[in-house]
Image (cartoon, rainbow, N blue to C red; front, side, top):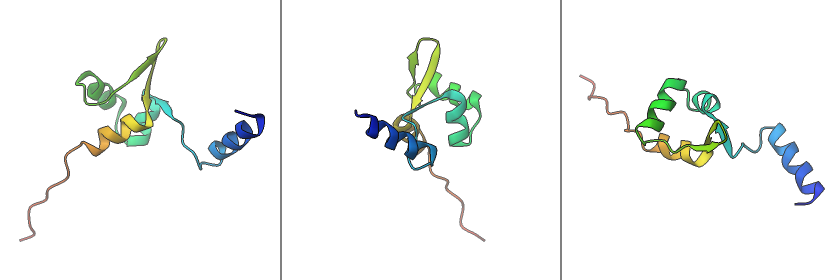
Length: 80
């Protein structure tokens, strides 16, 4: 990667045009609009894949998308 590539990617991230590849549990909770306890429970249950980097628990963007897409859809009864 060249310096100009790094500058372009950094600018895109700071302008919100590119998301990070991985996030912390707290960031994943904010992104998914669920609590940290819910994220940890999904990891424990094996429904959400997490990675470790030293003491940090990281969740990839793709893993969070798979988790959210795997949740059941809302089924409302027909209106009376």
